[in-house]
Length: 185
Image (cartoon, rainbow, N blue to C red; front, side, top):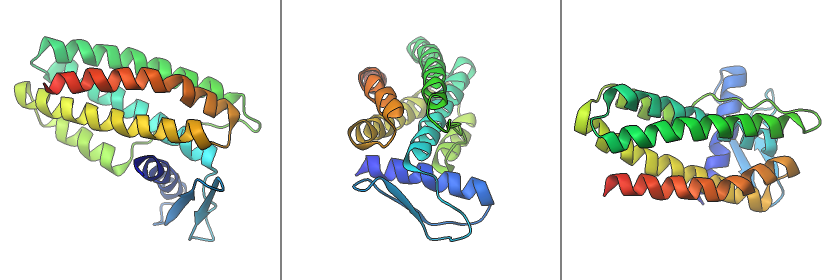
């Protein structure tokens, strides 16, 4: 269920960004179609919605982890954050490469969702141990959502290149999620 919500969120974000108007969008993973309730704005195809959601996830991980360099107290948190910057920069490059091989090519949009932006903004206000706790919690949540979305798209996505990308990332994001969970212990 989280995976469906994750994909639908990505499609909604794209539709909102495209026209600046409120648009209700839903994804039907059984038929791999996206339905928009606003006839003036075409909704993103599932592949584009997935690419946008994955790009936003990477952007969120990088932005929050960059904050950790200055605001975290724990050396463990700082080390994890440095690993996340490297890993998610690599993931972004792989996503762009996969999306560029699709015909017509897709361009992932890394615009953060409202929820991601709110979390990032709240982390900016924290320092030290308080930041560490909130950052660790945000990492668990973000990696769980990313993993759910990757698994869903890997199983039922509509673009073979992006399905391959998602499938290859599942074990990496699983490892990140486990690392993030250990930060909260």
